[in-house]
Length: 218
Image (cartoon, rainbow, N blue to C red; front, side, top):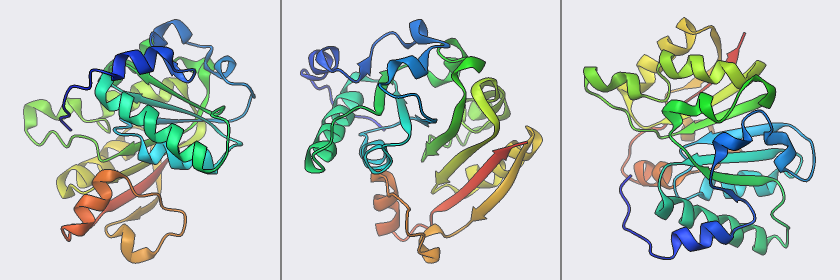
């Protein structure tokens, strides 16, 4: 997703208590960045932060980390998190946002970080063959996630793209994951705890069916 430059974003992020600017320095020590030691979940490509803001606020017994690559996006995510927590009269104590290149995520996390769940929501489908290794569900990436995802840990994946979804089903199985749930029309199932992202709302309004799966690391 392209986004306009936000001149305020960098300053607000630097002043934020829940933003980390050099996550590679935290490698192996993520649990110590939170006030409480509890299970950790990770969102890859948090965008404007509506998903992470809601899910983190709803689950205070889980620590959440959200990653994106650009300041303007993270700046909006910061503001969205602040808005949701403020409305619920809650302290922001179980979510951290950070800027990093997900293709090199092994440089900011290792096996000591023990992530219980990863969320991948509406990532770039990279449809051209030569670019498919950039997909966040490609086996090349899944091998990196296995470094810090706990045995039995899960990846929750949602997309609007049929081709990406079909390929991802194979990617997960080839990489030692078990598909424990999948759907080709998420909204038809009326999942009560589903949190819609910005993209999900947009695609649904266009009549595009949302595909989703849960993959468990064996």
